[in-house]
Amino acid sequence: MSDEVFQIGAIVLYFAAMIAIGLYAYKRTESHEDYMLAGRKLPPWVAALSAGASDMSGWIMLGLPGAIYVSGLIEGWIAVGLTIGAYLNWKFVAPRLRAYTERSRNSITVPSFFENRLRDTSRVLRIASGLVILVFFTFYVASMMVAGGVFFEQSFGSTYLTGMLIVAGVTLVYTLFGGFLGASLTDVVQGTLMMLALLILPVAAVVAIGGLGPTFEELGTVAPDHLSLLGGAALTGATVVSVISALAWGLGYFGQPHIIVRFMAMKNVASAKPARRIGMTWMIVSLLGAIAGGLTGLAFVSSRGIELGDPETVMLLLAQTLFHPLVAGLVLAAVLAAIMSTVSSQLIVCSSVLVEDLYKVVARRDPSKTFLVTMGRACVLAVAGVGILLAMNPGGTILELVGFAWAGFGASFGPIILLSLFWRKLTNWGALAGMVAGAATVFIWDAAGFALYEIIPGFVMNLIVSVAVSLATFRDNADVTEEFDDTVAMTASVPTVKAESS
Image (cartoon, rainbow, N blue to C red; front, side):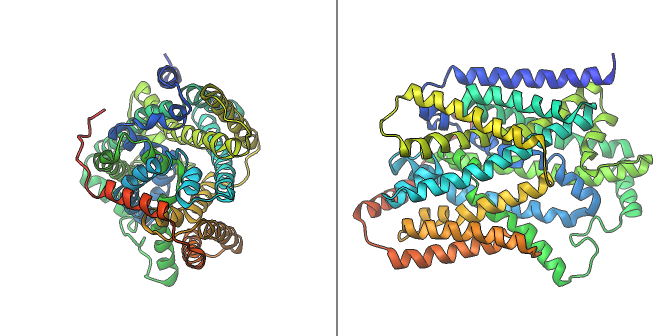
């Protein structure tokens, strides 16, 4: 039996498991809130692994190991920034957002929370933030489908279109039927696959080379600067800007809808603490595995005299060289898991925006729960269709698009989320002005081609404009104050729940 048959068999098995989970979730999805937010019943471990898997995408399996392979630990600063940002997000945003979104008229989307929290009767803020999410995520979904097509093209020699349609089709099936619960449960499997692959591959590479000593010796010979956090370069202004830009990726966490919606779906406020511990453990282990994979992959390739055309395939090379084809197939499935977990999360967020924040705003009647669930599924199908059309003829690199979208969300929503949760005087006009200022700054900064990552000026501009406009338009509102105080009280002292609670 050929190696390719084993590998394809492993991926077919993975696809079947994802569809089965989607059908399981389908039977437990009855209402619109179930479809969009799993009824706010996610246990800590599901919320944690789902947030991590939907966050990292193919970057942690392909992009980061490839960057480390080429440039060494200087590329690891982005991992440091992401770890700090994720921790702060879990520590401060998660518990308060979980409490506030339920207390503020049971908001089940980020735009509806903005509207309810700030009492925006004009509905402009909700529509504008919904459109921002829809535009960025439609292209984000397309970029992940492109990654799926490229993966199949490089791994199995299939056509790009065939690979892209396979990934899109399977992801669409379990998301379409399973909704948010289906996406979250599949994320658990996908996140586990990713972490195991990132742990096993570097260890196997070290064993194959002959141990840690020979591995470091090989690295010292082929790339002596790879173990330096500055890449062996002098501490120049350009280096400082590069490090700051990498660390600034952490700012993006506060405004990523597909991540913070997991906070909103947790079973209760007390779930945030065990979820944070599980989520951060998963993230740190996975990031260290990706970094180690890049370094050990370089040492392995050098020691064996292998020619590696694309550095981002170093983990795939290790899997296919060091393991039985069936195990290698499971590693390939882990790469697909990284891609598909992000796509499913983004499809659900886009669907919720179309139904909850656009359709329900303009609808003249109160639709039934059954109609809303059906429409939610139709919107998943529609967004996926647009993503497929955009992915047919991809332009630019996947990493460039992802980085720009990350900055866009971080600068548009990050300061607004933080101010909504921790500042009483934020107003709807302040939030709207800040969001527009942040998004516009990201576009302008990127177009100008400045070296500093655009999320930094965008985030700062949003913060300044939001505060300035809010101070100018603030009017005391007893209901808003009471709601804010209730939320603070709800999160000030919460009982601890065990991570395995359901």
